[in-house]
Image (cartoon, rainbow, N blue to C red; front, side):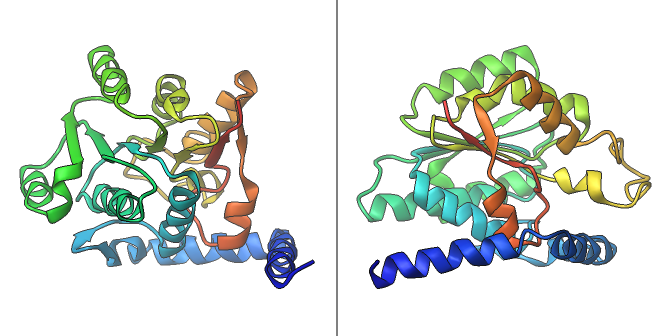
Length: 248
């Protein structure tokens, strides 16, 4: 075994140790307490608010470099930081000669005018297309599927309305746009693990959230597996059980 192989084996061992319930409990406690101070709002990517945990941003970077998609489809835009992140990663892949002509598609039911202007003014905007409307509306689904035909290897990120029914509907129409070997990443599955009532001003809560949708979807679809290694190694994540790798 050479040094690189030995190092990779050490990483696997580390990840296995981090999979214990005690570490997961610490992670949930951290997220539950920092959420009260809107911790995820503190970070930006190339100047745009990304509203994600730094650990999940790192996880996405690792996935994108490994998968090398030439298209990333995202539901949920908000301030646009995630779109900018995805566009920047595809730009890096292009500069390294790994892909050609990378494209990012963002879908949101309400793209605020000031956010749209800021995204369009960003240097990464040339890689970004935005569609406004409900991600589960039939006409939108048709538009997205037509757009997806331009991609050779696709990755999907679901981060819009976090209710069970909405996420399940998104999974049913968009998950399979992810190429075999790529990922459909479902964010804010952590809602299921938070204290009940943590989202009193929202339509989602314990028992009605992205994680319950993922669980139901996987009962009827065996083309994806939950990549537990990702959440085990980053520990602090809003997407436990949400990193879905397409295996067939």
